[in-house]
Length: 241
Image 1 (cartoon, rainbow, N blue to C red):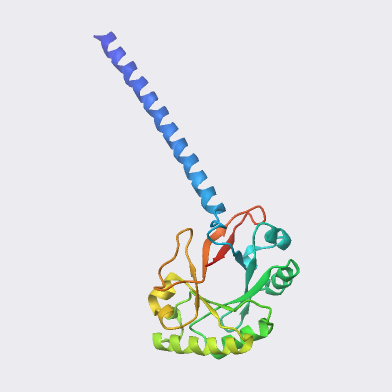
Image 2: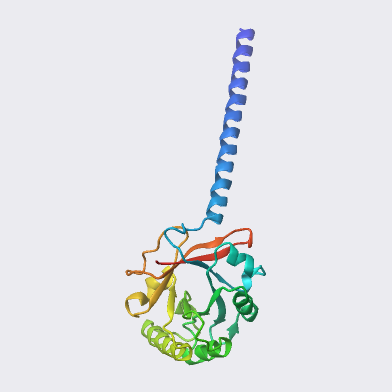
């Protein structure tokens, strides 16, 4: 009886060890697959066949990189973060703007709109930051911030009317119709895409965005696209052909 019990115990330990080895192997495979999936997502860019014109959006948070090398790997244009709200300016705007131009990359400017601040103050911030230059791409307005946290309550109707004022002032300064870069949250709240007849710039990693209810012109296809120029990742943008 003792030998039988001992044999059963040995078989049980063997099964336990084998089960542990199998589980470990499965965990290792899962980790490798996860790492490969993460790497693939980080380095993914849409096909040039489908989207021949591609570029980036850059700002201070992206650090320093070589613009000529960025152009060499396929950045046809760059939208450079310029101003935000009524007073903030991207500290690297001037440097990024000049470096992109020197590398032969087409440049546009982005303003991050703040629904808590008056349109007049925000447009003054933009026009004193971004030069009037016919060679620039159409200006982009980044619409992501909601009015929920404003010190003074701002109605949805006020957000819409102030945004229209801001758009008119920016278009007067640049001489070009703006592009509205609308986040899913902003669109869900204010339904701006249906109210403003301007070209749209939508956001969505890898998946074609459809949340605006009408066709888009630009798409941030990867919000953190890593490459040999910027391992930390850049916002990779494509243009609808």
